[in-house]
Image: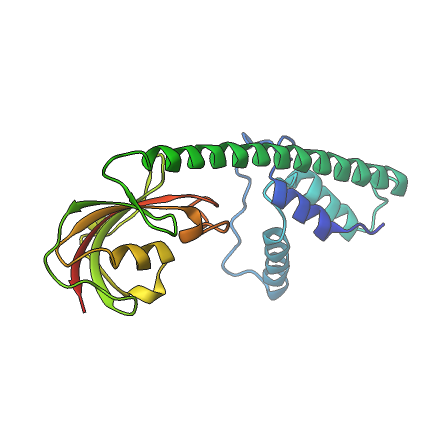
Length: 239
């Protein structure tokens, strides 16, 4: 009676949707291992620990441990081959349906976000203070600088606050308490272009379309795909 356990575990882990079978209110039944345990006890523990680390948190531990005990004792399985095959097939169908539902929900969220992003760029472009370059970069000069203007291969030192269109701050050198220094040709193209429109001592706000920022990829955990970005920038020094 062999089943593709790795596939089952990966399915559970990737969806995180089969948690209903777990008793989350059960008490911790962990038994502390004795310090003077034998080598067999230690190895047995290590094997169990390693196997458990490869299983998803949704696992029904009671059933799992019962299966281990009965399998190790070579007892007759609690379920027939046919019952397990049926359970596995139904399980796979359930996972597929849930994944399809998630995909549809994600698609709807993406379309909604794209519409909001497009509308934001359109409305921001109408502001009298906003200038738009040929690439689509929108910028507003909030303080004129008087120093040097960087070139595409210059190294610059800046202070900045990076925000999403909903106002969420995803990065800020000001919050960190120190400016950042970088070669201008090694950042997103919206920055490379925008900073060349400034002079030392100047301040500006860049509204950068997604294609001039992180595009379809975004940055996991901070910048969603296809996100326009807003940067309040102060150019401190050109090197």
